[in-house]
Amino acid sequence: MRSNRLATERSLYLRQHGRNPVDWYPWGEEAFSMARQEDRLIFLSIGYSSCHWCHVMERETFEDPLVAAFLNTHFVCVKVDREERPDIDQIYMEAVQMMSGQGGWPLSVWLTPALEPVYGGTYFPPEAIHGRPSFRMVLERLRQMWADERGTLMDRASRIRAYLEADLAGHLDPAEPTPALIDEAVAQILTRYDAVNGGFGGAPKFPMSMLLRFLLRTETGRDAALHTLRMMCRGGIHDQLGGGFHRYSTDSNWVVPHFEKMLYDQALMIRALAEAMRRSDDPVFAQALQRTGEFLDREMRLPEGGYGSALDADNDGVEGGYYTWTSAELEALGLPAEPNWDGRVILDASHASMWTPRIQDALRQARASKTPPAFDPKWISAWNALVVIGSCDAYLTTRDERWLQRATSLAHLLRTCVRADGSVRHERGVDRPGFATDHALTALAFARVHDLEPTGGHLSLAISIGHVLIDRFWEFETATVYFSEAAHDRLVRRKDWFDHAEPSANSAAIAVFGTLGRLTGDPTFHNPARAGLRRVHDLLLRESFSMGFALETALDQLEWASDPTVCAVDGTCTPTPTSPS
Image (cartoon, rainbow, N blue to C red; front, top):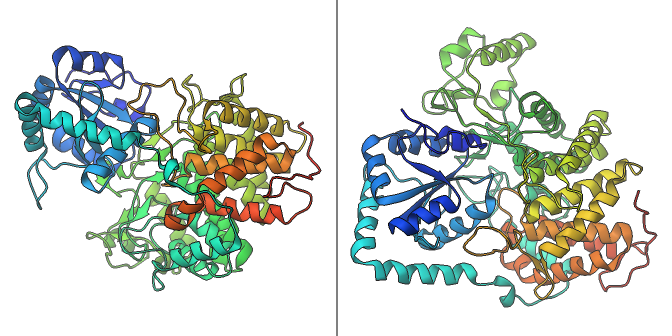
């Protein structure tokens, strides 16, 4: 099978599709020019290397020579790694959610040659099933509409573009955060709390670790957060044998995970577990925290230091094959167990409670004999910065020197992602501009490490990056940040308001501005922090579930306002500033 244009790309995900019969293009002008010249719709497929359903759609659809021939004849096909280009993913994910009411990966979107979306969805099966059209049906219908009903598609494109260009900031009424706001946000969150299994709502259940950390810091939300984390630590979403946390649980009681492991989930769970340890003496939190740190160093650490982005959900083409067992396999190792998922066993705390040192060693040796899941070595600045922040939290809770070493050594590596002008690269070793999250979280990481290593020069770096964040991303009129710099190849320039699997750009920016304002007493940072929190006041109430990081920043600001040595929320500053070093 011949290679296509993706075979030599840096991204592991793109290279995974490098031998498909689909004539893939990477995102860029070559593809856009071809679409204009040939007057074709663009088929945009977005995913990432560890995504199970991305692999399924590749096997079923993109490796099918008949489907590939139809795609190659009638469309210009573009692949995007959502970890490499989160700005592209963000735009078209929002468009698909508007069109279909749901999102996820693989993301499948059809665009005009001007990059305007006209139709989209997630996974499309090879045959129509459960009311979902087959991929071939969608292709044929869109080809026909582009030829015969183009006006309908162009009207749709205009409406979607207008939706994407709308600015939420103009519809928000600024107000100061208050203790009453915090109480109301907690009350709203708890309306969806599952008091039996922990978590919020039904299946699937995501860790929501930023929300849990916020709840842990409140009297009325703490018990719910502790119960949720306890259930997660005892369930299959937590790898009882190898440590770390899988992406989410497909059931309501945390037993059956979606098996990929993402760096940002580990970092954010470290923060939540460290806070849980401060609020409870239950040893389950300390055990999970220690195992997660060991997992990171053993399975996600890069040879040059720092951490890669993800471990695959699949191995040898089987979902969860590395992490699950047959009853016969476990019985041979001295651990009788009944299947609890698809004829296989997912280990949870009920099994771990029966482990002897001999059984545990035997399980580890047996797992080591399996083909390990693929590891994506992509170093992402924002995600490594989250590990630094989490490691600082873990050290301050445990006083375990291993966490201090993780924080400081990784912070020094993170310096290599900072350019001379204070801007941050999205990926280490790739000269591509970073996004607002890369800048905000990297600056926050350096500010946090400064507290632990005040002579390391970390604060000066944080301040420098903070100025870049203001100069290139911050919009003073609306007190919000854009997700990316202006000079990017995108349909629109978006603002990122809501936490998803990682903090939103806006929440992260407010957090670092507040931290730098507290450390330096400089109104250059304090004023945007105050204005940014005022701007999202409505969202802290209306969209509490998606504002965990900002809600915790609001708590910080309220605490700092009551401390006479730091900047007050009313704008006056009487600090004892820390000199940059």
